[in-house]
Length: 334
Image (cartoon, rainbow, N blue to C red; front, top):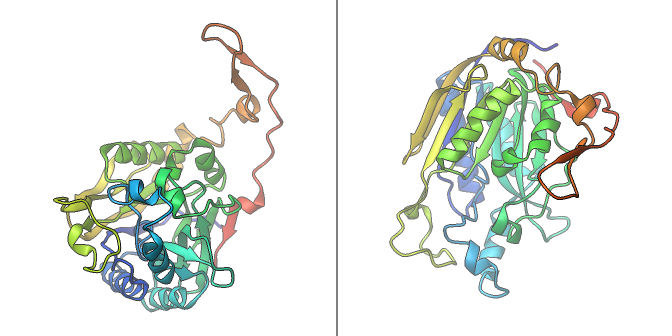
């Protein structure tokens, strides 16, 4: 049964141990313990924290060639993880020790079928791996590093701290992806990212209002000093920071920032989230309920006119099915 408790959540703005999966997982475990020690029940870590985000700042142009990135690709593979696998088991054990749930971004590999990597978001508790989501559409140059997600993992997981859903980085800009997750009724929206822009925070505020959920945004903080001396790609000269961060938590009623943003350092951004506020917000606006009008808008009901001018023409809407039970991933409840 859905409950409306007050839950302390933390966005952990961290720097990974670049190209070192074991050290990145160990760092994640350390910060889960630190957040839980301050009362957090849910700890959200950044996109591809294990253990490298291929940033546009250094990866976009050279990666588009056929040569020169073989060593980086091999080292990314070596420092990615299998899901499930030993690294995930370590995170499960940490969550069990600290009675916490963590969300963490990883580069996922498939050792049984060596090849593509995937930008994946894991939701983990002491009871096990609750959910895995692969990024639907890697952004721009990311497609040179990550395969596309199948889309069969969009939904909400029922956990001991509430109903948790979310998307990875610029997936959050995809209206239909958001709508698919909204149908599961998230109370907390997790958004690991590498975006440190003001526009990103504007998106997070909008999503909090649109979803009726608390939004927890967790970016990486990436100073140039984080890259090892033997990093196989030359970094741009004179650039000291490749990601400033901007971790924040947003309230669902008016989209107000209730914690953060945090810039230019590692740290925890924390807030106590009264889940009743999301229920109240949906009295005014429920994007997949009383305010959805899926009977009119479902199935691409409005299309651009083929004629001259800026008119639109309506087409017959497809019947809108009831939300599928598969939209909810029932995690173990304690």
